[in-house]
Amino acid sequence: MKAARVWPGADGGRLAIQDIAMPIPGDHEVLIRVRASGINLGEIKYLREHRTGDPMTAGVEFAGEVVDVGDQVDGWRAGDRVMGHGRGCHAQYVVASPLALMSVPEDVSWVDAAAFPNVFITAHDALVSNGELKAGETVFINGASGGVGMAATMTAKALGARLVIVSSRSAQKLERLAGFGADVGIDASREAQREVIMAATEGRGVDVIIDMIGGTVFEENVSCLAVKGRLVNLARLGGGQFGRTDINLLWLNRLKLMGATFRTRTESERLACIQACARDLLSHFRAARLRLPIDRTFPLDAIADAYAYIASSQHMGKIVLTAD
Image (cartoon, rainbow, N blue to C red; front, side, top):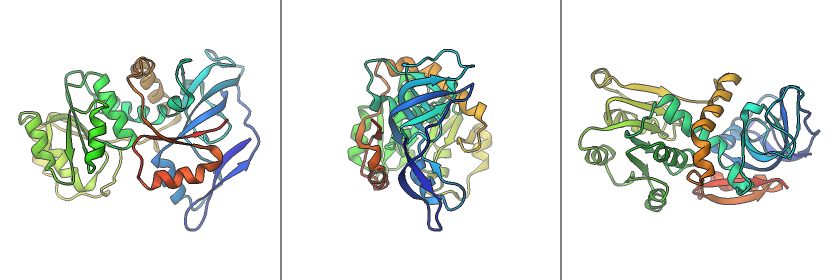
């Protein structure tokens, strides 16, 4: 089968299509014929940083048809339409745990299905499992024009957030975000974040912040939280260091500051995140309330072009590979 393989190199990884053996499912695994797979910024970063170790197949999400199931697998059978989260998904076939799979309705395209798992699992984990979002609360998502930021915007609204505030340095992207559930947009290139947030919340601050920027806005983020507010950091586009946060503010307002990543999770923890996402969000996905816009699709053979395009930051929405 064809697979997009990453080889280590002194200056970063090298990406190429290679013919490799088709995987064989174990007793507790499912074999899927991949029809489409989403690309995420994490894969681009991994390619740049892959300087040592063994070659690996890229990709963390997919959509396709079940081909075979292990002897100890219940609930899935050949022909089922599924999407899921795993490893080595930029390929024609992939094996996955049955707990990593979610069903795909007949009226949903493979491309739309492949755009769902990674960003919505991440957004759900940030908002619900870590951010403890409740219906009627307020949310701020900074750097919201990326895939996870857009997914978090839609997810917060679908789960009953009263007010969703987003930021971006692009007025055009802010306008598009309004169509996906954003109530207030902050143009980070010319507006003061705290001023807009306090005006929108009548001076109270927000209950949950999903932070994609990190260092350059970290202290300002903390100052925008309401009493008992929660900040979840997912990325550090503005740097991994911050200056002097007022600990008195943290103490008096009883704030929670936390980071979230899949890199240090056990397999059981990863599968629990997928199941929690399915529990809360699949009904919204089936009702077409949670669909990322598709910016472009590329065939698997053109993955290098797809990576170059996503690295250029020209897109808004998902980049998806097709593997027919």
